Length: 200
Image (cartoon, rainbow, N blue to C red; front, side):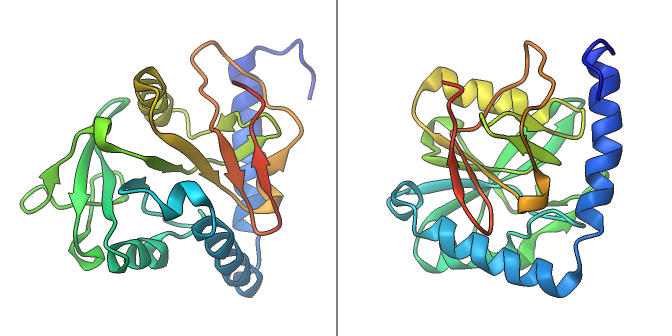
């Protein structure tokens, strides 16, 4: 991809390419990869000792997280899941049962505002982050709404939580085009490796 193209155009082209690549991951191989990602993830000291975990709810060809969330709840850890509040903004609500999630207006599985309790990001120890791609420095290519960049920035300003991207190996690239607002994660966990970000 030529670097003289506007970054927004580069990102748009990459989103199309990488979404197709992720969608093409065969179902049986995907399931095995998700089990490996979960095993690698739960062995991390930062997750093992976390009291509060912020976790997206995977949909489509994203790395699935519902089994992981069940396991965290069974271990007695508190789980916070995001809900789309408005353009580029997320609410953060505590989940006590995975079966209580509902389908939101954007097709995402989200906490039900009728039952879920609002949570404070200041309490989060670990945040698990989705993306279409991650690079070797922990930068991510999201879906273009800026939701997670804003949340990661807020967590970084508090200086407390570890941010961990979940991805299949096929979603890794050497380097992503970056803009000033793009926020890296601390670690990226795939089915084969754990990458420590060098971005901070």
